[in-house]
Amino acid sequence: MPALIARVEAGIEARIAATIEAMLAERGFPAARVAVSDLGLDHLQLTHVALGDGLALGTVDLDAGISLLWRQRIHQITIRGAELSAAALDRLTAASSGGSGRSGGPAGELPFDVVRIASAALTVAGARIAVSGTIAPAGGAVDLTASSDAVPLGPAVARDVRATLHDDADALRACAAGHVGAAEVEVCAALPRSLAALRTLRAVDTSWTATADGWRLDGGGTLAWASGVELRAGHAELTAPVLHGGDAAGDAIVHGAAIHAELTGRLAALELDVRGTAQADQLQLRERGALTTARGVRAPFAGRLALVDGALRATPRRPVIATARTASVRTADAEVELTGPRLAAFDAGRPIVLAPRLDAVLAPPPALRWSAAAARIGGAELRAPSGTLARHTLRWRAAEARWAGMQVRDPAGTVELGATTRHTATWTAITGPGPIELGAGELRAHRSPAGWAIDDGRATALGGELVAEPAAAAPDR
Image (tube, rainbow, N blue to C red; front, side, top):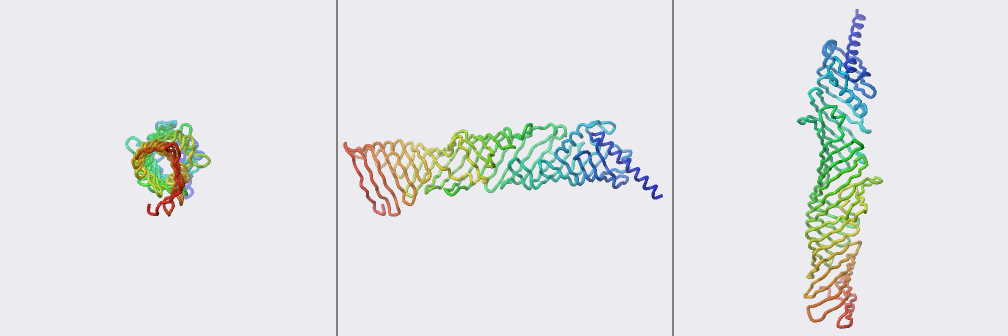
């Protein structure tokens, strides 16, 4: 008798296994194989479930048992231990959206109402992603979560990745969040509900947010992958209340920074065309004994971002020139106030290597070029001044200067910064305040802890030449 019962049970299990395999074959999985491990009237557990090469679903629980012999549909199945590759998942969606559709239902209709994924693993581009959640194929309801320790993103790696997929009105909303370097990144997109539409999808509108210590980046654009992953019509806005940066040569502080940019290009190789505007309430550059402060800064830019030999490089297509409402350049013994200045930082066509940290990019450039509508140095007023600050030398020139009733034409000079600051000034003519007029001349002086001292000077006057001998001012002058 026990042997007879065992044979009957084995026969029923074989019949149910064959019924399930036939249901799956009708829906595009002719190589499906299942094994029955636990059977009841309304409960069935299958083990070693495989839908074909690379499609291993592991253990599957069904809320139907012997009733499958006369039922054509299953309300819910539960999957545990599934292992899928990206290629296998592609074949799975292809089959489930294009089956033969005989007695079991129309083409592509799955023979169950609800799929509960207790545990599954999906391998995509070398990343292992754990998946769990619930799917109702007939009604289109989806609530899935996924996680992975690391996901390659071209030249970067996202770590501690968490993703969700759930219903959102007439679409599915997919979001993924993780860490890329020091930044926390989240990307979201709306996806179509049907598997057929997902299979033919080649572009999706996305939005993203990235935050790190002291700054935030918001943006969006269209991600397309018809031939490699690329960003189309991308836009981004970076805001930061305060940014600090610098190197051995000096440091920089930006208050109220905002960058608005448009981006387009390839993401896989990280080659992007970028254009936009950077602005700040205040920019301070402290370098080589001088403090440059600019207020109301605005700098349009256009160029290309690319990953070259493992380093991110920005190549401006045109010079990066910042304008400001006002600015000042302060040294140990002088302060220059500028009105409507222009600060030139980077030349067109010259690559700039960007550091991994945003603040390190803010190091002062090797040479700072500036110009302005007007400037004030102490009691002197300069018209159309300009100059450069490179290494330890500040060079300046102007169309005209007025000081203490004197008018100076074409003044120019240099300031050599150091423990002793050395000044050189030249001009083409000086008039006023008295009747004597000076022609072209030059004056050299320096300032040390002991005070000011004239080194030498000369100027043409009264048909001859005036010569200034070395002299030192009183310590308090």
